[in-house]
Length: 193
Image (cartoon, rainbow, N blue to C red; front, side):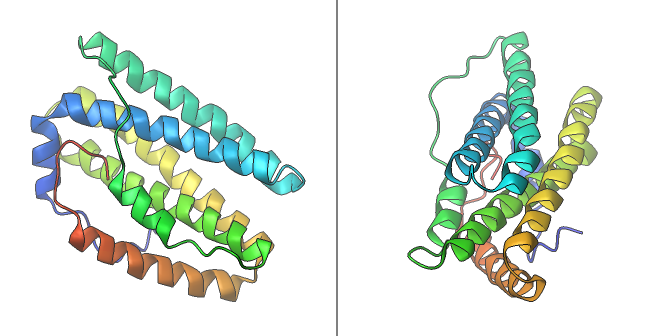
């Protein structure tokens, strides 16, 4: 369903399990950034009703996820700390087209969000299946389901503003670029991406 070109290295789950505090903190910031990204889309494209209507509930859901993860952090006696640089997301953002027709720019933003959601979904699935702690398995399963629906939503929205053929071709380019990113990034157990 996700069509990612490169699966996460299975060792990532073992590394993540050893640094669950860091994964929770990074996860919280990812949810916060997802909400912010959605708000930015709504603000930038407030004149596009499909964007506003479809993405407004996602903002609420992403913020609810941030709150859930934050509660988990506090419950465990951890602190949120300062935001972290997300090298994965920054590299994806660099692939977006700029200075072209506004529909192409919008589609690239939507595809970027879709790809982040797809990779998050894949990682949450790994956590929900491979962690030894049954509580965290269940905890991350619910996030996996949510990310999958967000991925589909962003893909469907992209097809409103450009042809399905264009979106499919551009999505393939994003997937190939993301594969390159995944081969270049250091395998870290303290990051969601």
